[in-house]
Image 1: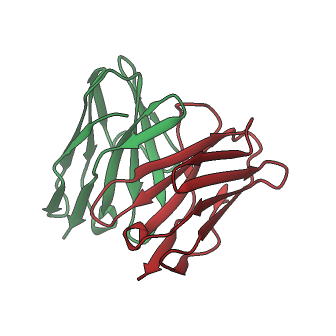
Image 2: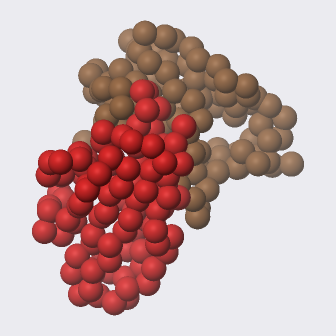
Length: 112
Length: 112
C-alpha cells in the first residue's frame, strides 16, 4: 500500500513556464513533507520542506503548497530552467528528523 | 545542511560475496538512515541506525542480509551480504536535521 503517491511519472514543460509537480498521501499521521531533486548518478538533493501547520512555503523559484484536508501537496517551479530537468521525489514523515516515506518520483523535462 | 561522504560510489560484485558501504557525516547525529533505490523504483528505507544500539529494520529487510554498524555519532556501515543480482541497486545513507534530511551521493551496486 503506497502511502505517498506521485501519479505523474513524467512532465514536460517549456523553459520559462511554470512546472507543477503533484503528490498525494494517505497517512494522516504525516506532518512533514519534503521535496527532493535527483540526478541519475547522485543522491537526492533537498529542495524545500513544509510542516502541516503551514499551507505554503517559498524559497526562490520553488514553492510548496500543502492542502492537508485533501492530503495533497504540490511543488511549483517558476520560471522553469533546463537545469531543473531531473527526477523529483516528494517524501513525508510523521516526526521531524525521522524516517521518510517517498513517492515514486516524477521525471521533469524542461525544454529550451 | 550536512556533508555526507559515502564509499564506494559504485562497485561490481560477484554473486555470493559481500560488500560493505561506509557513510561518514561531518557532524554528530543521533540517527542515520539507510535507503535502497532499485532500478526504476523509489527510495525504500532499509533500517535506522542509532549509536550504541542495534539497528531497527523495516519490513522485508533482515539483519543477516543487511548488517549495520554504528560505532560513533558520525559514522555507519551497511553490509550487503551473500549478494544476488536482485541486490543490484543504489544504496544511500541519510541524516536529518530538524525537518530536513540529507543524503550521501549513493553507492551504485551491480551484482553479476
